[in-house]
Image 1 (cartoon, helix red, strand yellow):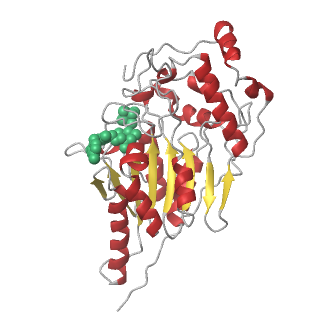
Image 2 (cartoon, rainbow, N blue to C red):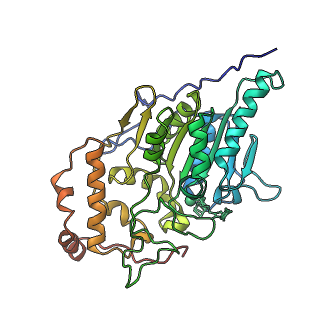
Image 3 (spheres, rainbow, N blue to C red):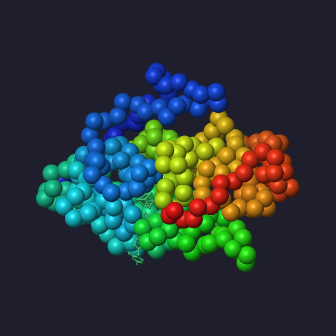
Length: 363
Ligand SMILES: Cc1ncc(C[n+]2csc(CCOP(=O)(O)OP(=O)(O)O)c2C)c(N)n1
Ligand code: SF4
Ligand SMILES: [Mg+2]
């Protein structure tokens, strides 16, 4: 006898009609949070750094997913800091996977639950199945297993929490480390004054273009409602979904602990991390157009990992940001176009602002 596989449909949080929310002078809502579920599948009791972006993302994703969830975590900070012996923040089933096999392990869970429900060995409904992998895992060492799971279209959500480095082993460069981002493997010096020379891998775009039947989206910890709704959309989608979430790493990026969520806004407002959603039915991208467009220095100057940048490096970063504005269908204001000129940064540097002194990674 075969049993039917019943699936959840999680309701979305209200994004409009924010009764209690107020806007600042730029029209940005002030970190509005809707009425959230009381339950916390990722509760207090972990050992991440203060202000850890991945920990904020883990909490919000699991709040959105709810108690009927099983979650996997490949090796990385969010495995190590969350699984100290006899101490765990999870109130839902959780499993560690090797760093390379987050995708294959999760596809096994999805296939297993589906088979067990069909055979009547698990009562159902089909649980929310997800994996949250670091960028070192999802964009580098384990990208093959995630791509395979997406391609085979297993019914699960594959999340990359992107802190733009291999954090847990001491802040090494990863494919998503931005141009000029200093890490222990990309120190700046006379030979390579910018630190990292390569631009970051465009992970989410690769996943959307390469697996056009999947729901794919980007988000940041600066937009909690967006993050939680995209989590729910990914889980509601029958088949594979991929979510790329920008999550600052306080230790690796060297910034004020309280600025994690603000960085999640500024990276979008400076054009360095476009937020979008790919609809596999229509096969189209939907881009978020932020109400503010800032110079990249508003973002870079908050972080010690960029403190060594010279005017020409800042100008190169502004060129990339301006390309991103065009790619998402926004005009580039003249003020931002002017900042493509290194001489303009030199003047600004001398007259108006200074980048912070780099205190060194992990200082
Ligand atoms: C195959 C393999 N290579 C290297 C390691 C060592 N290692 C453990 S955690 C880690 C960092 C993972 O980085 P990321 O996935 O970005 O997660 P984060 O630590 O940044 O949270 C590495 C390289 C490993 N566990 N397995
Ligand atoms: S090193 Fe970074 S990612 Fe790891 S726990 Fe600390 S803040 Fe979080
Ligand atoms: Mg990482």
